[in-house]
Amino acid sequence: MSTPPSILYCRLSKDDEQAGESISIGTQKSMLESYCREQGFLVYDYYVDDGYSGLNFNRPGFERMLNDIDNGRVNLVITKDLSRLGRDYIQTGYYTEVYFSRKHVRYIALNDRFDSMRDDNDIAPFKNILNDMYAKDLSRKVKAAKRQRAKNGYYISAQAPYGYKPNPHNRNQLIVDVEASKVVRKIFALALSGYGAVKIDNALKAERIINPSAYKAKNGDTRFSRYNDNQNPNKVYEWCYATIQIILQDRVYTGDMVNHKCEIVNYKTKERQTLPKEQYIIVPNTHEPLVSREDFEQVQMLIKSRPSPSVYETENLFRGVLVCSECGHSLSMAHRRDKRTYYRCMHHYRHPGECLHTHAIFYDDLYKAVLERIRATAKLLQDDEAFYRLVEERSGLNTSDRQLATERDKLKRRQQELSTLLFKLFEDHAAGLISDENYVASQTDTSPNKQKSKRKLLCLMQSWRNRQIIKPTLNNYVKPSQTI
Image 1: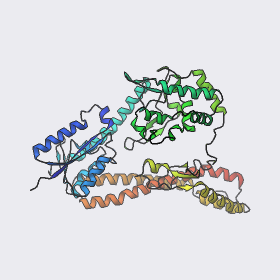
Image 2 (image 1 turned 90 degrees about the vertical axis):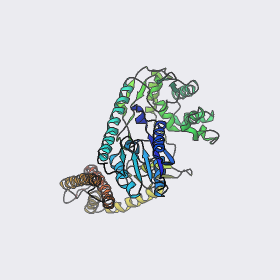
Image 3 (image 1 turned 120 degrees about the vertical axis):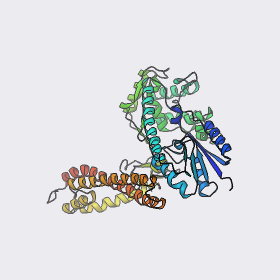
Image 4 (image 1 turned 180 degrees about the vertical axis):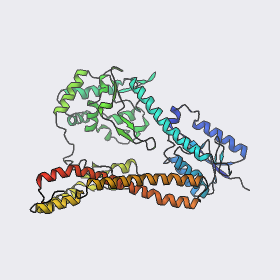
């Protein structure tokens, strides 16, 4: 019997590092190599994901490993423990109980004493659940720790605001970046002299002052390497209106530490939401100011008194109105190089797995279509009754609140039933009550139904909100012969 070519998979997330676990990539590799030598296994390749959460399976090393498995290059996968494979118990369970079995791949998790060739792995599903619970608990603890550090006035962001840099002797403190601070002071001075953000932008370009991203690239920050002036000789001098506004409105330049501007909504997706200013955690006098409080407040008054200019001539008539038909997120306005304006779904770019298309539409085309519909509808205004019934039908006003509430409760129950069914399928499969083929087939049938039910619920809630807005307005202008 030939020695099986094996895969050694290692993963380390930032959360693991913060938790103080001694599971560095080097430690994992050393442990796995030692085991392979003892067992006489041939190592085909190493697959490493450094800095990736176990709740997310879209990892480059993991995906490369799956590709080699699909192509039949290996038949043995080894990890330090089950949590290195993943911390989402449903997804991890799928790989350990279904995927590896279908591909005839043996899976070993050393510290958990899991070996798919043995029959005594009944505890594995529970360990996967515990790993998921650990990730949730760790997320809460990390969030609480960050909040406390913010209350202590520590600098906790991934990068320092332009004009400052981390203190090399105390990474929790900001110190002045001499070169960049001159530009920040210049920006505030121009604002105090009456310049708006666009004029300041143009003044900085005229003086050939490189923008913050290019400055970070120049100082060796690899995250901004695409802004290197060797690759983009002219782009480095391109500031933008939004950057100027952010600098002018950031209290950090008065010497106050400003944290908790956003927070993670879901520990699995890592989706963030921007918080209102009232929820910011601000600690005064934590570092050297670049502008006095009096000058800062004067600039805020000037900003409020000045109408916000638009870089592009197109007015955003459809702001907050357009939503993606696939994922339900709002469509955002964007501009092509030829200055033509269009709308697109930004959720597609941020989470391509959740929204498969951009659903882009040109502003001009949308404007014409809406205008034509308005003109057609205007003709109906000659007949109040016909107009009322049309709006009533299109906006769902002809459906009673009780009917909508019943449908809402029905969809919520369906969502819960499908979630329970998916979990029950996983438990039954892990217990050996259903075959691999039946498990995969049932999961394939159930998951799309859950997504469909979710979209229906979102549409229903939007319809309900529309009723609250449209009905009073419509009744003010049209008097139907029969009220709703």
